[in-house]
Image (tube, rainbow, N blue to C red; front, top):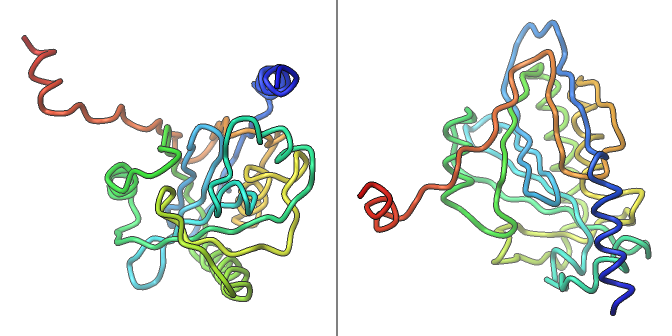
Length: 218
């Protein structure tokens, strides 16, 4: 167990600068907002549906995310031993603007909580194509899907393998590229920087409970 603890600490230190820098397309004729949510250890992508709802997609390891086998001592094995990937999805009411998406994610809560939210302005047609691709991928594998109450997502076992070289942030980076954005950096962690487009907006601090707010104002 000492080895596992050391591995986790070394991995966190090594990956501290292994995020991604995203540059949205410069000339967007029919813009629409899409969002990347930073959940501390992983990212997810949020896209608008034609009916006004918002689709959230996240990629992870099947046993870790879908089945909640996420004890800290399992993390080295989840990263070092390729295992079944999983694609998680949920829809919630829009509209797909920053305030609504932020408030929805904050109220829905779930694990792991959102730590930051980033808005990207991309072509509407590109967003529709990426959403159609993710929907088709999810629905083609929705046999024995699992709803995870902690995470608030319905997971399907994906055909890809999850590993250190292909994790949740790598997947989100590939989806963002398909949206017409330029992505640089290793993309191993949820450390996101957005440049030359809609400004990156960090998540607002969590709302204080009424009792805490009253105490702090005294």
